[in-house]
Each structure stands twice: as structure tokens, then as C-alpha cells.
Image (cartoon, rainbow, N blue to C red):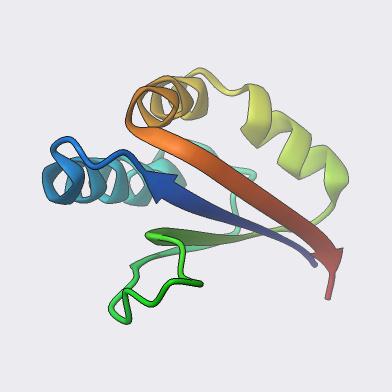
Length: 96
């Protein structure tokens, strides 16, 4: 199983509402992209200086499945919104 983790730092402007919007959009993807095995989205509660605002943990059978997800129109729509409302993102992909 391939695990895909992305952490996001949101812009201060409309931060709370943008996090809720992005979370809802991301959580709708499993029903739209059949190569997406599972997904979990969390909003940070610690608000420590080391924290990111949101994390996405998704799982795929293999790299090819992640590649399909990455270029799927439903995913690209969410990416477009994310780029507008975030300042930074970091990713880790690994084989479980």
C-alpha cells in the first residue's frame, strides 16, 4: 500500500472557513476517484509553532493509482482551491 501524506499551512485570511471548505472538498474525493483506497483529513488542534494547519493521509494500491488520482479532474479542482488559500504544503509518500 502506498501512503500519501500532505500537510498544509493556510493563509490567515478566512482561515477557519477555508480549512472547513478544503476538508469537505477533500473528503468528497473517495466517491469520485476509484483509485483512492482511503482518505483521512484532519485539522490541527494543537496550534503549536511547529504545527501545520491541516493534514491529508490517503492510501493507494500502488504508484500508478496515485498517478491517476493526481491528474483526475476532481482532484485538480481541489488543488486549485488549495493553491489559493494556502501558503505552504509538504508531502511524504511511502510504501507501507
